[in-house]
Amino acid sequence: MKQVRWHGFEGWQLEDDRLRVVIVPALGAKIASLVDLTGPFEWMAPPTHDVRQRNYGDSFIEHDLAGWDEMFPTIVACPSPFDSGVMLPDHGEVWALPWAVTATDANALTLTVEGRAMAYRLTRTASLGQGVLRLHYHLANRSGQAMPFLWAAHPLFRVEAACELVLPAVVEQVVNAAAHPRLGAPDRLLTWPGALLEGGSTAALNAVGIPEGPDYRKVYTRPEQVIGAGRLRQGRHSLTMRWDTAIAPYLGVWVDERTYTAGTTTALEPASGYYDALDLAIRNERVAFVPPGAETTWWLSVSLNDESAL
Image 1 (spheres, rainbow, N blue to C red):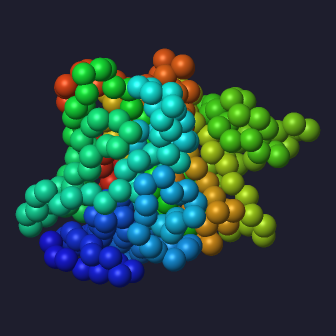
Image 2: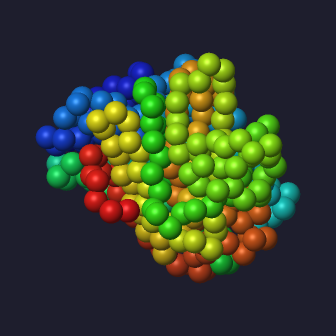
């Protein structure tokens, strides 16, 4: 592992013979680069806006919209579960906070951040070996109350050619999570991978392309259906994510075809709550908790060109 610079910020680079990863602690522990060295092929989206220091409470879409950020303890801004007069900010707290480097070795980097509106310490260790990036999370509840939390991975993967989203074969329906002129209102059930639209036409939800005009969509797998893996295929390259379903049984799928980002991006977003806003996940009774003064852990892995069963 070595120190590098990414758009003027200090980064740490992990590398083996198959994969190179750059992490930027000051920018919310952002995974700024993930390169398949057999290609080579860069999987992470480049900045849409200038890269600058984040400030607590900033709007997420006004920043770089690049790479992989951590969403915690919410995605959509909402009141704190401990004090309704305190708002949890857009896309959560930790993406806009600098993380402290707490441990390093030849192939692992440990970063830690302290909560602001809620009393917690979140630690992530990124390690690389045999072409697999492993992320291990450790959450400590530093309050005297049970703490609900909504964690979601937010990797903006770069799409340079026709890209296929692959989910486990058990997924036959998904839930629309964003109002859309063709897909309809939030909470509408859609068939996967081909959604039947009003009027009888279909939309290939699993296909991400380079459209003439901007488009977007976000869907979730059905909340009662526990999903622990997903894959992107792009040309001869593929990327597979697997995660700990004990904490993160829900999966969001985001596609941005030049609506917010300069290019086309897509994201597999495993999450500990359903969906997007912590207060909504609490009302839905679909959210993770950590007991008072206790700790919990979870994990996520990323492998390249792995075509084993999901």
